[in-house]
Each structure stands twice: as C-alpha cells, then as structure tokens.
Image (cartoon, rainbow, N blue to C red; front, top):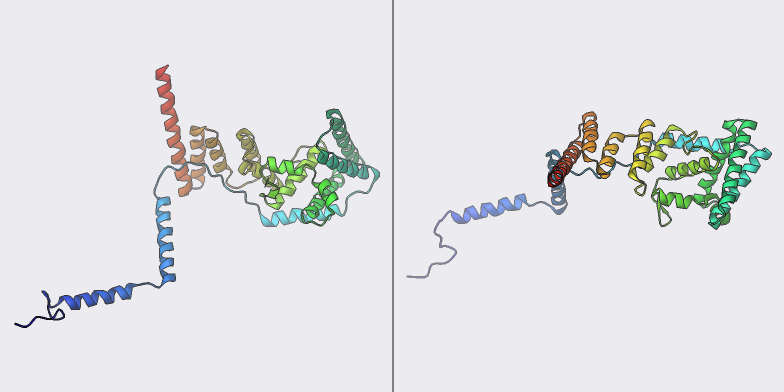
Length: 310
C-alpha cells in the first residue's frame, strides 16, 4: 500500500475548508493600527465611565479649579488702564507715589527697625486718607490702577530691571505664601497675580485687602486662597471660601465640603457634599458623598471603641 499524502489525509474531509473560512474571517476582522488604537481608547473611556457611574466611595480630596469669566477679567484690566491715565497729579498724589517707591525699596533690603516700619505705614495710610479728602476716593484709587498697570509692564519685561524690582517689592514672598508661585515661576493666572498685588496695595494704604474690588476680583482673590493656596491654614481657606461664594464663585459648596474633609471633619463634610449633590446630581459628587460618609462611619466606630476602653 502506498503512503498516503498529508495533503490528502484527514479525519474530517470538511476540516480544511472550515479552517480556511476561519482564516478569512480573522483577516476580515483585523483592524488597521490607527483604528485599533481608537477602538482601545473608546473601550478605555467606556470602562472609565462605567467605573464613574457605578456607586463607590471616593475620598473627596480634589478641590475644583478656579474659573474666571474671561470677559469680566478683560473689562477690569481695560478699566485699570483707563484709570491709570487719569491718575491725579497733585503734590499729595506724588507724595503717595514716592512713599510706595520707598516701601518697595525697603522690602528689597529686607530688614528694617520695627518702629520705622510702623511709622512709614502709618504715614502712607494718613497720606492716602488726605488724598481721598482732597480729590475723592475714585480719584485716589486711580493710583492703585496706575500701580497695577506698572506691574503689568514689569511682568512683561517692559520696565528697566531696577524699577521692576521696586515695583514688585515683596510681592514675590506674598505669591510664594499664597501658592501663586514656585521658585520664582508663576503658577497662578496672571489676573490672580495682579489682584493679589492690588490687595497688597490696599493693605499698605490702611485698607482691607479686597477694598473697592470688582466682583471678578473678589472671585480671583478669595477663590485662589480657598481653592489653591495649600499653605494657608484650612480655617483661613474656609473663610476665604465664604467670601468667594458671596462673590458668586462657582462650585463653592462642593469646595467647602472638601475643605471640611481635609480638616478631618468628615460628618460635616458628608452633610455639605450631600447638599451640593442635591443641587448638582453628578456621579462625582455622589461618590464624594459616599466617601465622606464611609470615613465618618469609620471615625465614629473608632471613637466608640475608644470610649468603651476608657
């Protein structure tokens, strides 16, 4: 008997045609690389969405970012430039300009007798009050707009370096403290920086930091402190958040719940986040509520065990 050829030997005569059909089917289903990558992205996104939709406890530790209306920001900057061009030119106004320059110079030196510092600050406040009495507050505040516009030129490298240093003065320390800069690099939006500068100007002249701020400036000032100034104590950030909310800042209730959570007040955080979720029934807030409730339950259990031991 002659040897049977492998090509013609088969336990199932229909196996080879079936295998060929499977090969054709695989070839037809093989995706080009770009389409395959897109398919993977779609699947990953869908999987992430499923994870989000599914109720699960998530620790609420990520604060929302500060969002400012672009048109309102542009309006304030334009108004400052216009006001700067109309700043008073009186002897009292020039005295105040000179005092601000001296303040910047002394800040660069970095050391000064406390009594001299207090005397100069008192004199600046008195000079500002005299200027207000002389020409009105609207006119006096144009000097603040003038100073803010000069800061803009300093940051744009349009001033001689020695003058730019005097204009900025100790603002760099303030920015570092507020988390608005790291190693000399700005991390805050430019509008936040100039708003912090204007707050510093107010303080130097004996005013509240947010004095005569527009609504968008109050959002920038208090919103940055509440949402991004991680070096500030939590109670101070909560106070800033109240002012941010009064100024119409977005997602303020959510942020308040997160700040309470970060301050280890889990039960109160859960209550506040539940109210935020009721107003904005998103999956994110739902999961934050569950996370705060779970942590509050654990803390309550630990406190109960501790009470039993004692």
